[in-house]
Image (cartoon, rainbow, N blue to C red; front, side, top):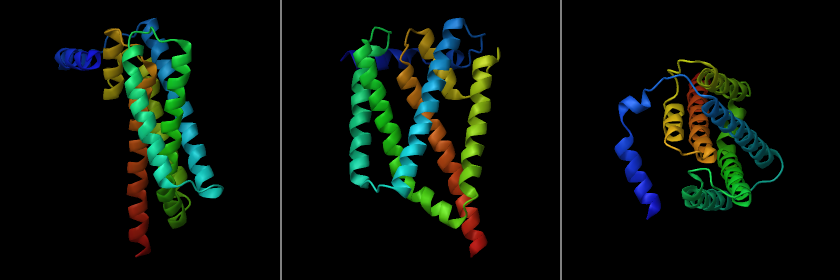
Length: 201
């Protein structure tokens, strides 16, 4: 019930003026964002590695990957009410990081077939989509951390809004940005893949 009350309270406080608050970052906010983006980088590497392993070495059944993703998502969501205000135990924090790694690896496995197909169409599409989405995301991320005026990613602003309210759960904040990055990558991959399919027709 505590979790539902937190959601209701957050919805009441979620106003446009709070989201569009571009005041300079404090030291604590900057450290929090660095933690988030560090974990985001680790999650991206886990996704890429699991995708590579699934394509070239060990074909993991999609059903198992889906179940891992589902279990880790629910486990992480269930544990987030403890960690909102920074009073999470180190053992629980390690467990939550494992859930994050489980989500990252299962997403890599679930995307591997489409990535293999696009790589078959034209091998130059994959690095273009990867580095394109990485550079777009990196520019937004670096400007969010180092710039005093951060007119950038919506989710970064939501993260800072949550942090100012006392929510120091960097793992859940990383998940939000990780899903943004995966969404951006798959969108670019789809656009470039469709363009290549049209060329071949």
